[in-house]
Length: 277
Image (tube, rainbow, N blue to C red; front, side, top):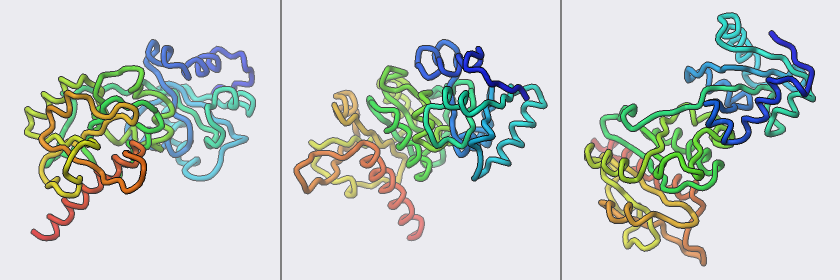
């Protein structure tokens, strides 16, 4: 294990640079911080390029198990394992309560061709997601609902940085358990059509409540950004348009909350169908 005490160490400087998207894109690397998130990454088969541990702030959870896994990867020459001081860790960490563990991992990239669907596909599409925290929160909910994949429409634009450390943090590691693909709207619509997956678009202008339609078959729930809603391409392509009823002065919910309602309505309907058959 390498011991690092200097804030000017080249490795330390590069980790700090990886907080910027340009460097992440150029180097093909991103950061995972926190015991729970790091454990989920390793359990999902991710092999870190580097791992930084700070004994002074470590403790709790699966820390001991995680360290054993990192020791094995280091012994096999797959991961550079570094012990750092509190001062160094404070420099490279992007949040306070992180368990004293930070990983540098290859960025995760998948395409629509890579996706493997269940017998009754259950897909979520986000059109123009704006905030990394929202994407991370949605991933956590998507993992709980058991979806097959999250598709971010519009490609890897400034609004859909899949490898932003804040996405990983907000997802609590679900970014490693839910397949995620960024692609153009046209590509995603064509991919859904080829597989006979019903497109359900959410919009305040719809007449039907989301609870009123049959969601037990192959389905893609499509959600728009909080600022702009769904683009016209999605509204035109939709097999069903649905609305979440709003009894107050507001016309919409937070994106992650609204997404949770739709996903768990699919879960509810499918569970009810399974119980009745």
